[in-house]
Image (cartoon, rainbow over all chains, first blue to last red; front, side, top):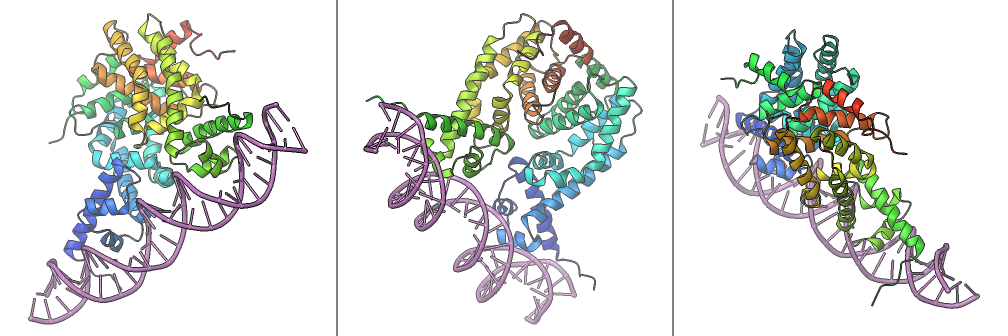
Amino acid sequence: MPTRPARSDARANRAGILDAARSTLAHDPHASVDVIARSAGLSRRTLYGHFDDRDALIREIIVTGAQRFNAIAESITDADSRIALARLAARLWQEAAHVQFAAALALDEAHVEHTAAALAPLRRAVASLVQRGQEDGGFRTDVAAPTLARLIEEVARTVVSRTDASSSGAADLAVRTVLSIAGLSWRETDELLAAHPDITEIPA
Amino acid sequence: MPTRPARSDARANRAGILDAARSTLAHDPHASVDVIARSAGLSRRTLYGHFDDRDALIREIIVTGAQRFNAIAESITDADSRIALARLAARLWQEAAHVQFAAALALDEAHVEHTAAALAPLRRAVASLVQRGQEDGGFRTDVAAPTLARLIEEVARTVVSRTDASSSGAADLAVRTVLSIAGLSWRETDELLAAHPDITEIPA
DNA sequence: ACTATGTTGCACACGCATGTGCAACATAGT
DNA sequence: ACTATGTTGCACATGCGTGTGCAACATAGT
């Protein structure tokens, strides 16, 4: 028997809870269900009407967020590995609202496992990108590929979660940081970004 | 009236609690008092005999840790800012046991403030080092000094807290990562470290 | 061996968060 | 206007962590 569509306000409230959870948990991964619900303008009891569990709520945020990240990872097609990495960082940054909570949650013991599984495609993309970068001489080779891939992930996570996303130039900083870790000197990064202004451009 | 010296086993237990707290909290900043006490081979009740409070315990770890870090920061005298930064990173890394918990605690909302205050001297040292590095052309200038200083701190914190300190070459990785953020290309870092093998050398 | 000093387990009070049941109330959709 | 669907506050059970009091036990230091 097909469940009949939910009432419009209920759908809006559900979405509101997800939004509130994203921004609240980004600031504090241990935020209580009550705080999340209140920040969505709803009661705790109502939240439990939409989600079985605190965990069910978090799982849904992780899954939908991961889908966006993975889609972005697969959309990067630049031949130059340096450009590809820069673009990946910039695109992910534009998803700030979704990224920040993910970065925070990924550090939380309780959800590390699930988050890692959901982000497997993104991780694979980074790994192969790093390998390609080392082969074509774009990236550093003083660090083994798997280590470098992990380093890039960790540092990207840090920059994302500890930077005020609203401040101007934040995306630019994130991109430059990631390229630095990949081994580029700052002057090389400067030239690269100057030659490809579309990367850090804010979409209309 | 001068308090008479504590019994030897009591002193040892107190030190054991501090050690256990350092390693336990490094892994999980929210570890309970019971877990810390048990990991020190003592009962929860005993821990409360040595420290008024969970907070008092943590405060003591932060303060003693900060003292070591600040002392290291002040011991760096290299004229070349790049070498100075490399040596600072390497020396701090050698304090792994003390550093890892600090990195974890510094991320914990509850103690951010206190940790920041205790580490003010270290922070000042990094700030002036960055400024000097930008002036003598050793570091990147595409990022403003205060931003670069903060970036270095954050990334160093990340590498320290998310790397297995026991794995060989971990210190080397930490140093290389920090220099990358400062703007050096990996080849420049390679040359620098080759010319100054004492930096990443393990002390006898 | 004696005793001051430590340690332990157990009981308790307390606070905070999760998750559920229920009755009263509000409103979207017709 | 009617009603199925949502929302709310309140009570309640449960679990976990903190911090304390106390009596029994262990031992370092003499």
